[in-house]
Amino acid sequence: MKPTAQLHDLGQSLWLDNITRSLLDDGTLARYIAEDSITGLTSNPSIFDAAIGDSDAYDAAIRAKTQAGLSGESLFTELALEDLRRAADLFWPVFQATDKTDGWVSMEISPLLAADAAGSVSAAKKIHMQAACKNLFVKIPGTAEGISVIEEAIALGIPVNVTLLFSCAQYLAAAQAYMRGIERRIEAGRDPRVGSVASLFISRWDVAANKQLPEALHNRLGIAVGGQTYRAYRELLDSSRWRNLAAAGAQPQRLLWASTGTKDPSASDTLYINAFAAPDTINTMPEKTLQAFADHGKLQGMMAADGGDSDATIAKIAATGVDIAALAARLQDEGAQAFVKSWRQLLQRIADKAVTLDSGAPNHQPQGAVSR
Image (tube, rainbow, N blue to C red; front, top):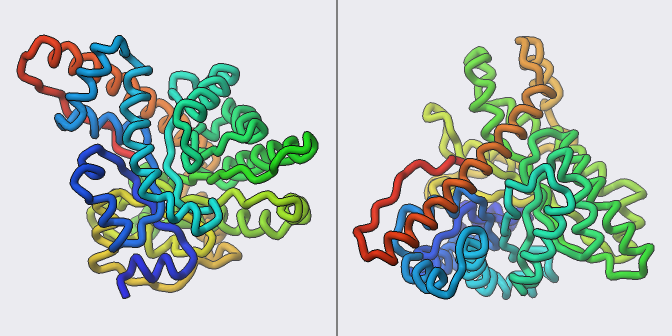
């Protein structure tokens, strides 16, 4: 049995952290579904920046939509939703077979709205309606400003992928927002079943901390933070508050491991896949990581529901002078800034392509999408 199938049988969903029109056109995504147990995917501004900017697969659509009068965010949203609807169709059998638990795709609201709660809610509603796709999450950042947006979106019945979570505390804030939204729906007599995932970013912890740590502690902080968060996730699912919501028909907001591609060339290319093997969770993998795990990955047991040695590891790292809470806040802020940069670069690439395609000049696009 392939390692990816073993993970799936363990109870973990494997999602692809990528989407391009080429993946859809050449059958690669369908092959990942059939052969590597992929049951969903995520996208973000950096992914679409690379997908649209570094290929000609979108040129005909950009030309047609420009001629139809679209530009800027409206043009991009149409391009992205075309891809995501096609992907959602491929995952539809999984969505149905798992009673809407799995088989999702995700679309981000504009990161330029990060400090605008009302604008973010409006954007989430617009994407949800425009997509007309039952298995599409709207991605909303789990920043301090985004917490109220998450609650409101859930209360409105909009499925949400909470993104840019880095710590256990940030995860719990997002989970509380999700539950408040569900409670509001129950009080209003509405269907309490609204899909949601909470995406905890892993590898960026180690990118940031390794240079400050002795080699023995390299690449251990992200795993330790994940261990603490997994424990909190399990405790929340065992809480009386959640059991009451579940009894009313709500479904759990699943914990999703994001940014699981290994960034340290000296570490295993499947480091974060092995470390985060856990039932009732999702691991969304970059293509290279998926291919590596499918080729030579080996399961090494499951994550400890009680967090294992995560507390001890974090204590050792804190003793070296790393301020964990401050680093979590910094990583979230840097992640939000990176998505703003990618968003602006993406819109500029589309605008440049539109002009180039309209003029018939040779098409040349700059490189440099922000890495997730």
